[in-house]
Length: 123
Image (cartoon, rainbow, N blue to C red):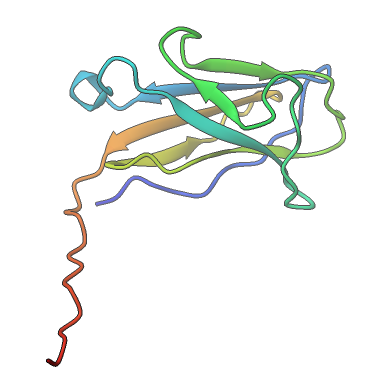
């Protein structure tokens, strides 16, 4: 069974929204040097929110303990962090009842890679 689901929206607390990334278990953890990129999205409009200093995406890794806090957000707007696809993993967006927090857990994807045969050619 797959673990992936859709991103969960949440409202900031004091203008801040924190994302925390975890891995299902030690065997699912990525090899050293792996980074995961997220976009912060306005849940009402679907527009990507530009975060100062992170214009090309929010990168989480071992160095920042897989955590990031966006600041200066509107407390009355719902946002969601959307993970860009990581080959071989599926993202499980966790619901956190506390305002201002979103968690994403990654699971090793058990599904095999799709087979893409070459198109037959007539000579």
